[in-house]
Amino acid sequence: MINHSQWATIWKWENSQILSKIILQLGLSAIELVDRPPRKSPFSHRRYPRRQPRQ
Image 1 (cartoon, rainbow, N blue to C red):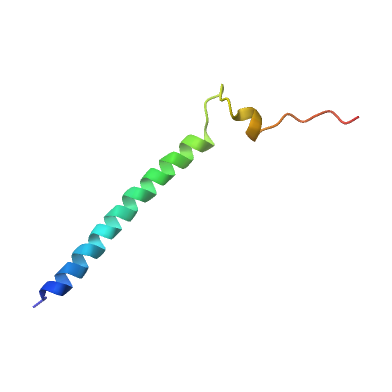
Image 2 (image 1 turned 30 degrees about the horizontal axis):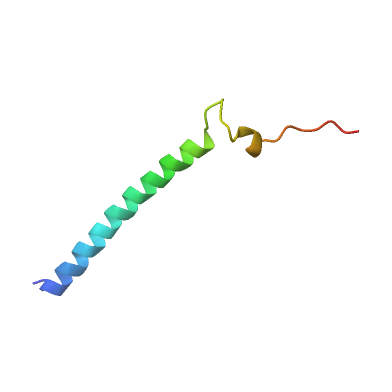
C-alpha cells in the first residue's frame, strides 16, 4: 500500500511535470514570436543594423 506522504510526493511531482511542460510550451511560443517579428518591427533596425559601406 502507498501511504499518504508517498501519494503527496507523487501528486506534487506530477503537477510539477505538468507545470514545467506548460511553462516550456509558453517559453517556446514566446521565443517563436521573438524570432519571427513582423516585417514592420520598430526593433528590427536595432537587431539587424544596416551594414555601412567601407570608406
